[in-house]
Length: 617
Ligand code: DON
Image: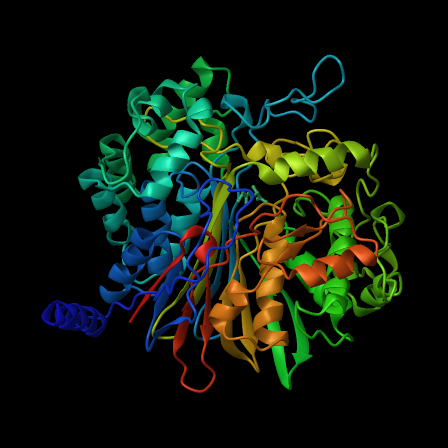
């Protein structure tokens, strides 16, 4: 027995010396779980401290994804190569969200200080129309924007990964794709999480023959531990590795995809694929002083709403002294900031390539002061009394806001929707990477729903249902209960508004924290809280991820709390007039990396809520 223990100790040590450090998950008393969305764990084991790596760190929500990233770093790739490797690997091992048929955002900050935002968000096809999901009765057709061929936006992931690799990577696309191709070809042992999630999604996946065949084992299902091979996907990835992104946008993969679309009433054409372009954008940035340091938040610009939302929230919060989430007053102030920024999101945000988004106004300190002045120091404000603000006087950028009114708000319907939507199994995936040179990548990408539209192509990959992120009809909530305006209306070539918001934080000009999350609108709250925990409250990296989260998105006028949220604070909030959602749920899945300011070590902080995995060396 003693020998066995010693052997285990030696093996663990050897692994660590070999350069792989693993999250030490020390089980804690199980937390009761009242709702489990696909991929989330009902009783997660909370790691007490971050995983330390002297050189580099990869944190994803799938151990095989993190391993793929480390493999490429050790081959001489930089953080961007590793991010591309993880992106393709997750498309194989995490088909709920990892993808080549979806889209997302990659925020890159190179060690020399250059920060760029790679926007590879999906686009509406050329034949998409503003009211394509509205039926003859004037109402949104249930499911039309969330299931099947009509819900699919033109995918951006392959273009985005190839673009990032070409502009920022050191290896070749084929080298970065090698781990993914191997995983698809040789297979991998299917984890309990994926096996359960596939069963949970059998209804949707079973509607489409290729999805049924590949993901449901033709209706027989897979058991945890079975080797899951995807030879068709492997062949598609091999063609992309060989021919580059044009394979996906103009080659056999494009022809197969558009032929399938044409057979089933989908809209995407060869022209749509040929027209697809990655947009390299400037990130949005804000600077704040907290705990004696200067913090720079580098985040996601439109078509993400997230960067603007958290910068505006931090502007509103700047004069307040936040103490902890055991302090109801601190929670109150953050919830009120969330309420206001989500009201602004609903009205002003959309694809800034086509509509004027008053970014300068929304981010001005004077505007924040005006929004702050509407906060009651002690009690909840009703969302009905808080509309969008008026950033126009502070907006020095060009143009006038388009569609700055939500035409038909129906908050009561939205409240019911929100409760239902919050229980729904959405799945997106975020990962963070820092390499030995100090290059950092924060990447969030998605198919929108778990398994997207549920349609698998004849080339073995799932397609997104990102069209639901557009405003199907102003005043009618989308699958996340979000109300949106005409600024985010469907139009050919437009990109739907997103909450995904990869973010990088600097402390006194130096890399300090890499963060982001899945979770629909809850992405914004989870990411904001991770930053407040790390920078404002001074938590260590893992504590910043483990801390209980809360969420408010203006409409409906409900506050969501995590099961681990302190009950005394919840009671206090109720006394202040807050409506707490009757069911509790996990909020987001933040996979973060902190930098130890003293040693420069990379602190991998995986989120236990969905079995995050930090691997570094
Ligand atoms: O871009 C967005 O905001 C959504 N499509 C993200 C969806 C999501 O996070 C699903 N759940 N985890």
